[in-house]
Amino acid sequence: MELDHATCYRAVQGRDSRFDGRFFTAVRTTGIYCRPVCPAVTPRAKNVVFYACAAAAEQAGFRPCKRCRPDTAPGTPAWSGTSATVTRALRLIDAGALDDGSVDDLADRLGVGARHLSRLFTRHLGASPVRIAQTRRTHFARQLLEHTNLPVSQVARAAGFGSLRRFNTLIKELFGATPSALRRGAKPGAVHGGLAFRLAVRTPYDGPHLLAYLAGRAIPGVEEVDGATYRRTVRWRGEPGLLSVSLDGPGRLLVRAELAHTDGAVALVERVRRMFDATADPRAIAAHLGRDPLLKPLVERHPGLRLPSAWDPFELAVRTIAGQQISVAAASTVTGRLAARWGTPLSAPAGSLTHLFPEPCVLAATGLDGLDGLGLSHTRAATVARFAAAVAAGELDLSAPLGPDDFIDRLTALRGIGPWTANYVAMRGLGEPDAFPDGDLGLRKAAPGLTAADSARWRPWRAYAALHLWASLEKDTP
Image (cartoon, rainbow, N blue to C red; front, side):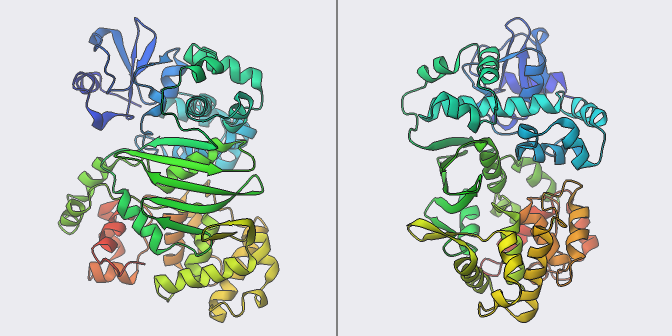
C-alpha cells in the first residue's frame, strides 16, 4: 500500500486524529512505531517510515509505543486500499481462520493459491497473513492482561494461542515485557471480572442511531437494547453465554461477555467490531456520498451513520425471510416466537433474555410442521425450512469467502428468496458496505424513481446510502 511520506508526516506533526489507525509511524532511531496522535516529540522526517497497519511495522522489526498504545487505535478500514481477495481474507482471519488453520487452508477457501495470497497481503498491507493474525492476537491479549483478571493461561487461549510458551515468547518480543509484567503495569481503573474489552471507534460515530436501529429489530428473548447498551444471548464454543456492548464515551465501546469458555474470544470481539461497524471511515464515506445532491442533506443530518450488522448471519436471514411483506414489529414478534419454541432456553434467564436462537440443524429438523402456528405464512415458513436445511447441510456458506456477488447468487438460487432479501442479508448479515436492496419500498418512497443504475454512483458504499435514505423516513424503515 503506497503512503505519501510528506502527507503522512504533516498528519504526524499536527497529531491529526482523522488519521489515527489509517497508518503507523515507525522511527528508525528508536525501533518504535506509533500512532499519528502520539504525544511524544515528533521525530525528524528523515528518521521515519510509514506503514499501512501495525502488523507491517512489527514484521519490519519495530515495537509498539508504550505511550500511544497502537493496540488501542481504531481499526484500519478493511476495504481501504486493499483488493477484494485481501478484504475477504481479513474477515476470515478476524473470524479465527488462522487460529486453527493454515494459510493454505485460508487460500483454499478464497479460491486462490497460498503464494498468491501472501503476495497480495505484502502488496496491499505490507505484512503476511500470519503476521496480521499474530498482531491481532497479541494486541488483544495485552488488553485482556491489563483490563481483566483472567489467568495468564486463559488470556493466551482467549487470544487464540494454542501454546503458552509461544504466547509468552511473542508477548516478550513484541512488548519487551512478560505477560505478568504487563499485568502489573495496568493503569488504575481497569475493568475486572469476566471478559471485558474496550474498542476504539473512528469518529464521528452515531452510536445512538445504531442502537435505536437494533432496538427496533431486536428478537424478543434473544436480544434487547437498554439505554446505551445492547445485550444478547450467544452460543460460544457450543455453550450459552451473554454479551453486552455499551457506548462508553466518544469513540469507544465497552464489550462485556459472560462465557463458559473464553477460548478464541478474540474472534468474538472481532464479530462485535463488525456488528457495530467500528472500523468504517465515516469521513471518506460522507465525502463520497455527500457529492450526490440527493444524499448531501441526509449525510449532513446524520454524520457518522453506521451499518448495524448482525451477530449471526443465519439469525438475521431467518428474521428477514420471516419479515417479508410484514411490519418491522411483526417480524420481531414472529421471530421471537420461533426462538421461544425452538431455541435453547437459558438455565437462568437474564432479565428479558431467555433463549439462544435455534441452530440451523434444529430448524432443518423441525421441517414445515414445526413452524406452524408462529404467524408465518405457508410460503415464508417453507422458505425458512429450505434455507435452514441448506445451511445445515453445508450447501450454503454464510461466510461468503468468494464475495458478496457469489453469496447473493447462491442465496437467490433458493426458492422463495429474491434479490431484495439476498442483498439485505449481505448488507446486515455480512456487513457488506456495497450491498443494496434495490426495489425496497422504503427506498422508493425516500427517492421516487430511483433505479439500480442510479445507485451505481454511490459505489462502493451503497449500503450507507440506503441507511441514510431509510433514516430520512424515520419510522418507515425496513
